[in-house]
Length: 235
Figure (cartoon, rainbow, N blue to C red):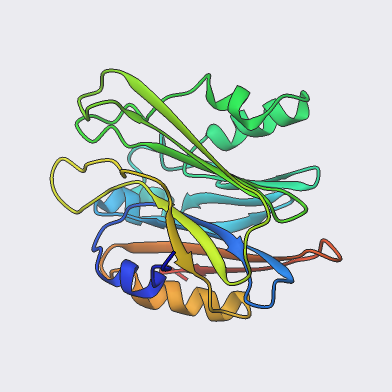
């Protein structure tokens, strides 16, 4: 199957919203994780990523300009045991809590649905990267984009190939209201040998006006050590 060029894909989408990339490095030695956020409103753009003990969180760049923290302040990345959870909302904590109880990420996400932000009804996208490099992605979205009916989709990937990843994002296209992502996560090429190289590729191809923050991590499959990088537009 032909791989989609991630750089071209991003550059052709002015507002993919929030995006998760999980995959494998070209040398097959690292598990790859990337997450970015974008924003069209001043409130959404007024954010940065910062490191925490178990991952990262979002926070306001200028606290005086924050008007509504709901749905935009959360922990996008949390490490739980040997797994890494990455999502576009507070369902990160839902998945973490489920895993800590010995349940599955699906058990946790079955208790959640799309975001209550009509008329967009932003989908909740989530991923879990396992210690061996296998991973899963999911999306919870409004059935018909009208706030009724919650659909949950789960995708699991064992033994990912070197230089490949799967990419999922919140919005299918930049129109009003914003339609949810459709179909399976996009199968993309991962050509970067390091977090910096991948971060540079992604950041340079995100829309200049709308991009806000980016997180990239390469997890060494032999040692478990993670090499992480954050880029914030407000730095």
